[in-house]
Every structure is written in C-alpha cells, then in structure tokens.
Length: 70
Image 1 (cartoon, rainbow, N blue to C red):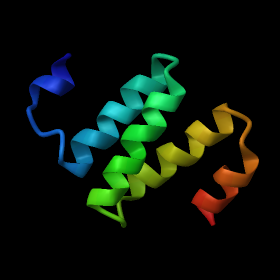
Image 2 (tube, rainbow, N blue to C red; image 1 turned 180 degrees about the vertical axis):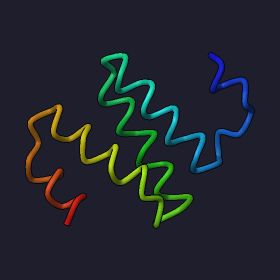
Image 3 (cartoon, rainbow, N blue to C red; image 1 turned 90 degrees about the vertical axis):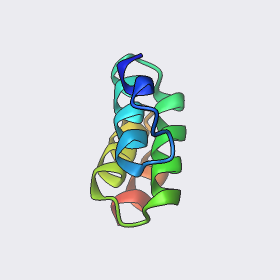
C-alpha cells in the first residue's frame, strides 16, 4: 500500500520495488510482471534484472533465469 501511494507506477524504481514486495510476499508471478514493466521503462535497470532472475529461480524456471542473467 505504501509503494502504491508513491503515485509513480510508471517509474522503473517504483515498479522494481513493487515487484520485490510482491515476490517476497509469495506472489512471484505478480512480482515478475512488475519487474518486466520496470525493464520496459528502463532496459538497463540492474536491480530489476537481478530480482527478475531471482524470481525465475524461485519458480525453478532455469531457462528464463539463465536468459535474464546472461
């Protein structure tokens, strides 16, 4: 709720934080969606790439995890 109150859903940093909080709350698929949106805004966002790879690992999706880190 606090992150949504930032009122910056189109900011890559905010989207990355939303992805992180969803992932850590066990909502991995929702987290992935936010990471992907963050990367649409900033294709070089290192945090979003790192967290996205971790999310794929949580799902045992090694193919996408390796592609993300590669």
